[in-house]
Amino acid sequence: MELEEMKNVWSNMEERTKITPFQISESSLLEFNKKTNVFKIGEVIGLVIAYALVGFVLYKFNNLDDWYLRLCGCVLVIYLLIMPIYTLFETWKMKHIDIVKSNCKNVLEQIYTAKNNLKKAEKISFIASPFLFLASIVILTKFFTDKNIFTLNIQLPIVFLIGVAFLGAIVFNIWAFKKRDKEFKSVKQLLEDKN
Image (cartoon, rainbow, N blue to C red):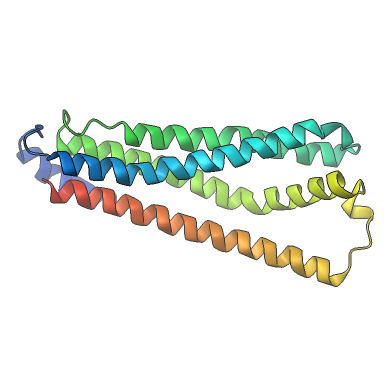
């Protein structure tokens, strides 16, 4: 939703009265919580996977004997420590919006802010994912084969499989972004319909 559309919605909402518990049914609150839980569950799963990978990389970090392998390891660990916490915090803020005591304008502003912050994280993630993917391939090759991928004689089928996995990761990112947008629209629609 563009900024001008949001301003129009907000000006319409200012004319309405403050939302009270009597105007929002308990089933609507449950539906709002269910829709926002979708964000939280996905981010918690991502956090667990990311931290498991961080633990594995840190456990095997001494095996990274070249400076560029260590650099790849450090970049991967830093990214996987910071980004999941940031997105989880933003989804937590959206989940804990008090729709009973706030007016609709404030609720929509908070959801719009959370959406924008998550969009920024998505953009950073989408830009960083090719580099992180390559760093992961380099690091995991060293961990599992104890050989440097740059000194290996890689055959064409392996390169093809890496390319397919890379494209699969990009397709998964695009699918996840579209799913998150759809969920944001349904939360916003729920709030607009109940008012």
